[in-house]
Image 1: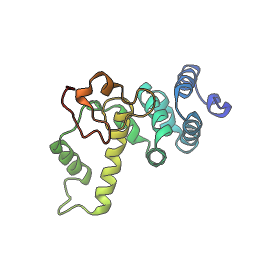
Image 2: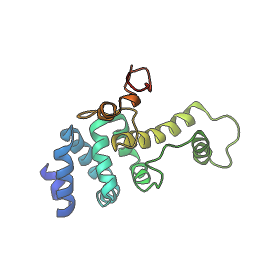
Image 3: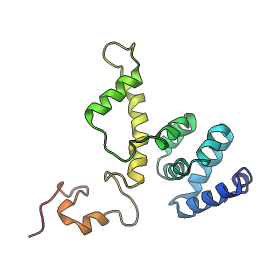
Length: 171
């Protein structure tokens, strides 16, 4: 672990961070983003480090998505919102997304949302979706070792890309 980051952390947080980075697929990228978060958003960095879920998700996100990592650096509260969400591990329905969109736009908003507003809403939802996938809560894009392990155990539920969707049981 970097001396710069380690010096800023309490021992228990430094130990947990080192363990997460040691297991990360791109620890250098995760370290760079953590260091930037500490320098650019020190109070948010402290809150993220004091939440086991938020710290784990930050390290994972920082390894896999530069685009969303930059978004978290600009607004780290989004990561903390996801970490404290009671609905993180469940799939949201179309009605729930519609409700979230109206909440995002505000009660006074009338008319058709602009492309910019829809893009901002989409970016906010992408963070939750990507973190959920990385945490194993979804099946959209499992990466790395064991990526298709559920498919090997249950070939009737093969949902790999180009698999043709859900298959029937093998004959």
